[in-house]
Amino acid sequence: MAVTDILNIEGAKVGELEIRDEIFNCDVKQHLIHDVVKMQLANRRRGTAKTKGRSEVSGGGRKPYKQKGTGQARRGSSRSPVIVGGGTIFGPQPRDYSYSVPKKVRRSALKSALTVRHTGANMKILDKLELADISTKKFFGIVTTLGLTKPLFIIGKKDETVEKSARNIPHVKVLRVEGLNVYDIIRHEQLIMTVDAVKKVEEVLAS
Image (cartoon, rainbow, N blue to C red):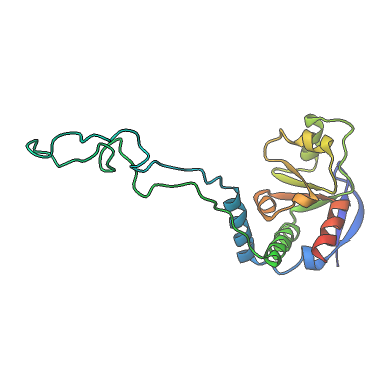
């Protein structure tokens, strides 16, 4: 097991913690990270884009002009796709873009993402992350003190005081352990976890 420092919110070392190598120091599988991130982004798509076909566009019941003698192409409907204002051929229709990958792939990708942050020295472990009251200013002070630029904070349990204090700070996000995902780990430059969050992640991913 690797040993990493435990910091307080002032950035001072207050102890050490052993973390599992099979989770935070495993073989990085970039292709699995790519597959899972692509799946997550696809699942977020709303899929509501839609155009009207010629049968859905209003009008067009009457022949726009006579068949012969005008010098123009013959027209049976003003809703023809080749006319401005007509229907659209093969336009987008509402669809579900979501799909899933095997559970083992998701777990392996998550371990790889955690390893990338840990081995890249972009992961910090805090003894605790607590605030007396909701305060964006105080939370931003923690971010500044720790020298963070675009951090993802992982907490072990629901804490509305911390979550609400961080929600209006640009490039800062707080997630509970159950919401930990590959996309957010990769998207943020630093990963900050509390000790109890690390233990819960290890409990889930080592099983």
